[in-house]
Figure (spheres, rainbow, N blue to C red):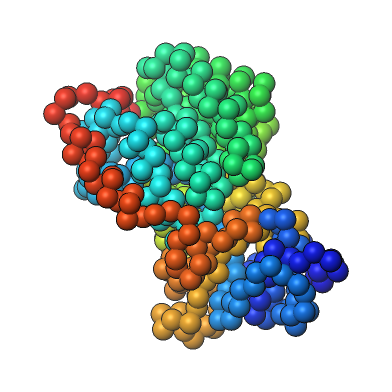
Length: 454
């Protein structure tokens, strides 16, 4: 598309790059020697370098040798948990929760959460992540970090039924208070933890609140097959059936993990009234030795979008969505017994448009096209590990690394330029967090915020 003539200069023109584009059937393609014109935080045009050469612009980036992608989206994480990276290793799920993570989280302060979120946002910006969906505690602190760092986020204040009705009320109050904050870069959700920690009464009340206030719901559900089998044994229903009977499937719903989704759940998910999506984070499933993975093909066959995620760094050790993209492709090939699923182009579709829809940004992000928010990352493919390029989609999914991201842009604002972070002082964050770690990781008190028993 040719940009319109305008007296005012564009705020940014990125030129001489290859741009990942989608056609009207959402198929992945690549525009060569292209330029992106950004005005008012929005992509005004994707044109040629020659056509953009004489357009006035406040700022220009020569991106020769680089590929412009829509900013990556981390569809489910717990950003402040980077403070627990590597603390609970080589443990089964139950011991991971009960012996380490939930005792440590009983020590959390808002300052710990804020520092963890700053470190996490720095990590994600450097890895080309422009938006993340977060589900944690003391989320006012996370919202503050998102606003200051320049990122985009879907945020929810997590709660358990053990907290009483106050937990659910805090989740609602947070969602209403921060909805549309940070110049619209923050969207919010209600965030019950999971069907095994939130009872049916609270889940049904959450569904009603979601409909009343026009809010989505973000929760863990059917995380693994063991949870599904335990739910069937104790209650005669799967976790997805719990969501159906409490009417959560009639809201806009983002489900984390879903490796325990079984065939009988699929008709319920297909018939759901709201926008239902699943976030998959395969690295954690491999670490926990779960026998199953998210049934991506079955979900796509019934129209459920599957977005890419990392989960928290306490289980995944990183917030690298590039790794999640490659692992999703590889794990699905193994699970399906078919090297044709997921292809590199399918993986890129999950990383772009499907991830945007999963977090409720389907009309505004996930694509570099006129009218979409200018959330853009520039990836350098000149390194020896990405050369030669025979299939650009395969190079991006299976050869490129997060360290190849040179520049990260959100709403037309440059958050990282040539690998230099511009909005977060990482050494200061690491120093202060290090001073607080002894008190944070102390488990001598014998407390835990919850008990995992599924």
